[in-house]
Length: 491
Image (cartoon, rainbow, N blue to C red):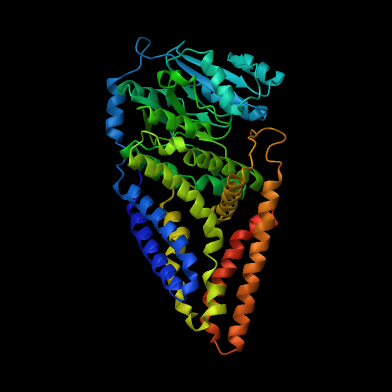
């Protein structure tokens, strides 16, 4: 899909400048707000890095890709064998059957495509389903060591195809998936991984969580990943990727990590001189988390995986170029700025009311207005997915998931990986604790804001000066109320 990034660049520039000016004017209101300057600088560095990637990254060359497919036409003689890894662990059978039906329809020379079911749930029903499809069925002997990573590494050790592709239980490939991806590998022997997007449909019958979490991924897969190709810094996200066996032979397969083994695997191959190539062609479609707790758990895993890589000294001593490291760091900066923004963005209004009420002006909202329009209008018009208010609801859950990940990292608390289909999936106190934190913060912030506004109006501040701040606060309450009030997506 085309990036069409010009509207985002222009609107994003206005948004970044206005927010930056507003933040620094706020910092300069009094000397003891120096701590807010740290947040402002950090956020601006992240925005600047993302802006550079978006502006200077090269688009995907579709004509060159199509020519490559024509020049490297896959036939019975030229097509390399491909092992298809289908890792599963207690997902519903109807989901597995739907995915495997699409795998069976893959267009590829006969006998060269070898689906293998990797069942960490060791369920007889899954075995029978695999036999019905004629797929090889494997249960490794050392379950549950290293969780999904251990499952993948065991499969790597007992297969021999020069390439293997991974489809998670809920991702259905397009019939021409291999015909689109394998020629990229054959054209460049230094490519270790060809990654394709994780695409999600958002029909009307889906929950607001599914619609919101699907749409929020579009910017990353449509622009960021594509632009990072320019510097060889696209990341591996696991599913819908084709791996070259030779690039992983030295370490026995994918990275030995209990969380986000895909990101670690991608880092390993790049560190050892290989390349990850990202193609923005939508070649598979998956399912999003359908409950707030499931989305929270997913985002917490992703953030934890990024933190585990970037806080390891091996990353800083790696052979990656400074541009590649900067791209990886911008990913962590996304998590950290999103987490801190949940608190810091709401601080200026109550602080001004209680410390410098004479600076509380109705036009202060103008500094935030371009940012509001960016999220509510510009991206909504740019997006090809269903970009509705559900995105804002989902982003609140994601922000608190990142807060929890940083908390766990700081205190050394281990996050146990649980597959989405497991009956125990997502049952932990982290989601509850973050909802309690969100309730506490919302009550505290609004108490300070409302009491401050009441006091200032009673002591002479014109009422209209605070109306915009109160309207913005009401909007923030509307955005966060789904996280505060609803345990289930259909409530």
